[in-house]
Image (cartoon, rainbow, N blue to C red):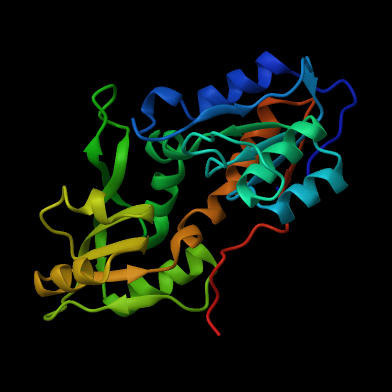
Length: 271
């Protein structure tokens, strides 16, 4: 899924933007987010090679230049709050200058991809098996979309089995677990990619909460109220979905080569 099919004609600009809008409609993004076309430095009418990444770091940009890509899909927006200056001496500003100098276009779907039905959060919700799934915070535009997912499992599982299934789904060897004070079988699961604390605040209870990171005292509060909490570190709840996004983009844009960034990784590691 990571590498794709190079067709010299490329994909027209409006074609790739339309496909990305179909896969992750920007109207579903959170109001605080910065999504869509973020860097667009030239009048290129078609694109030949897209690189997909969670974070657009200097290492990922180096990889993009080496692979001669012309379009980057960065799940996390590399531009989030307003920049007042562009200086080579400041890392975040230098990244923008390098992108513009190289003529690279950058697009970010972020919370739009989280919220859409069939997107990143629904993929994460599949970790423990089939069940009834609904958004924790439904979108006012479409109740099938929204922030987080609550899953009522068809077959309850033990906490130990749940941990192993999450490891398998996310291809991890280690996760962090805080058990409920009186853990029983897991029948209901709440999931949220990235940092799920604020989303989980909208939920009265689930037997197991799965996200990348939560505040210490929020974890203590949830376990005292009867929920177990499973944390994977932020981007480990997100990165596995990129292969499916790459596949969808390549299928819908037959003139576009699509690659997954090999240098993209979680900034934290267990040592």
